[in-house]
Length: 204
Image 1 (cartoon, one colour):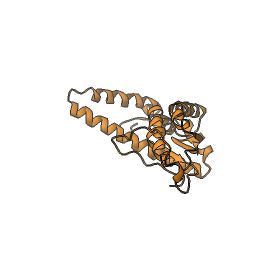
Image 2: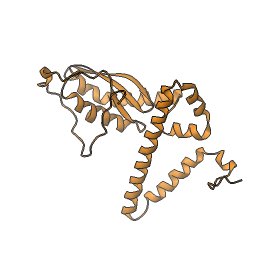
Image 3: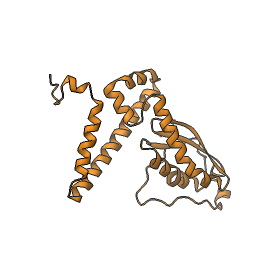
Image 4: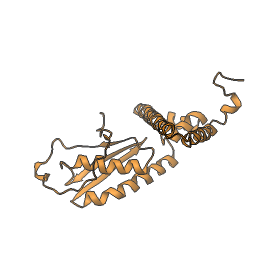
């Protein structure tokens, strides 16, 4: 029996296979001989991906704020909803946590030598649902260059290593910049050509 979407109940039972079909259609379109079509398809996929990842991520964060871990555990067992959350690294599960921890550590391994070269330190407080919460310690705390280090160094590395990365949160930000640290020769990564995603503090 059809539900009006073109898929019957038996087909819905193998929902996970739909991801493979989506990928196959996308690959066909990305192989189109017209480069304009390829560019448009790439842009469409990127925007849909951002929309889904951040939309679902915000939903999961709201569920957690109401102590909804048990609910998220149940969602993870559902073939349809669980598959969607897992596709974006959201929800509960040791596999998701291990994947996130490995990706974040690989990203920070690239940045820590830069941060530590002038007496700074980077501490990860927690990683959850695509959000990485960090503290800047040592000479980085209150340093005028710390924002650039976070945005162009830490955030850029996270995006390169973790496809499910959503945003970076700075915990316990200094109330003001320390003028005595303005002379520190901190080498930060160059700013990208595009405008970066805004750095968030918890609650913003």
